[in-house]
Length: 147
Image (tube, rainbow, N blue to C red; front, side, top):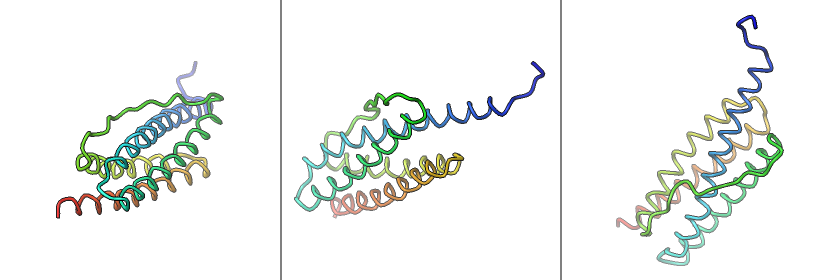
């Protein structure tokens, strides 16, 4: 009416942005869960298979936490979908996973820095730290394949 925004408008816009970011995170985690199951089956040995399944377990935890936050904000359960297809070969899959984990670290840190709710920020920072650790493991597996 007077050409200025109210606090409620700003808060609503921030909440909508967070919901969109959560949807992206949920879909990313859901896609990773599916892909890492496939990568574990393709792993050349039991040690790598176990390592990838441990990473997958972390992704399940992230998915569950983000879904919980999403539900508390929206009142509905998320409808996750696979947003990135997993490569067919183990080598390509590990390289894809490494790159995806690195990009996810940046995205999660950005979300954590931009959200006012400390528990949401903490959840994204924790997930970012896990994703960085996952990237190191995928890089380790990748270097082993090139050797």
